[in-house]
Image (cartoon, rainbow, N blue to C red):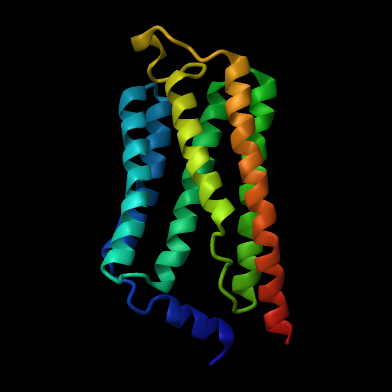
Length: 203
């Protein structure tokens, strides 16, 4: 059996776990959030994305506490992270009129595309994608906090009309820039692991 087929078989061993079901649910909620937000159902959309991000917290806790860590879970979790991040960014690009901020949002899409290509290269060689380093986890946490705040109080935000508060463009730029720096650091953090995987394959 080829390395690729062996990897696929191992990937689905013990895959029916609560954490994996939560990850699948999180992925399923992403288009629901996007459609609702773009149709100006802001409050429900924000509630859904917050719930989805909370499942990200709980699936990891459950996996560790009840020994339900699986190869598929290690793959599904980052995929769900990347899809949710891209959905949030695309929604913000569509909603924002400030072009400078739009270009900053596009950086996050470029990063995720690079990560997806890198993961695809490893899988095609029968290798598993690189696990998240500490900077990756920090970047994801900062991204979620910043972007949910921007979704709520940024331009055309979910809670602007209700609270009478809109985040100034300068403040939005600063917050998103902080998240972008963390994201860039996480991208560089993945490179050594990516290179190690390729070297292991070649040895």
